[in-house]
Image (cartoon, rainbow, N blue to C red):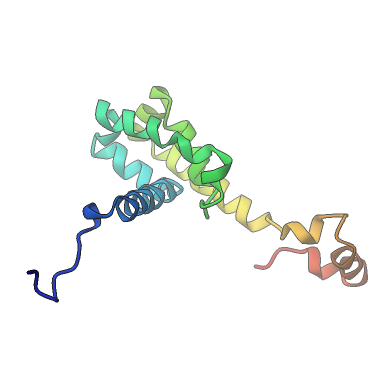
Length: 141
């Protein structure tokens, strides 16, 4: 007889184990959105390890529609795609300019990004509000 305070481990339940694995992989993929993290991985020679390169290739499943919907930082998928190329991985290691370039591109994207409903002409309420108040379409600083 088992004591009441022992709980089942995640590996005893395949569904819980799969969920935990997915959440861990999702968290890692989203971390790839950070150019400084990419640069750190490169500086530690992690991006050169064959097992890690295979893992990055495996993570491409996040580009599928059913999985991409969980991604909060779309740059993560772009960086995951770039990491598939040896030239990018080696450039990331030796070039702080590339890190800063990626960071600036992200900043520019978020600085100019607008709510999709605000620019969707099929949304009459947003279009009417924008016509009445042009300040709505300006990005928040």
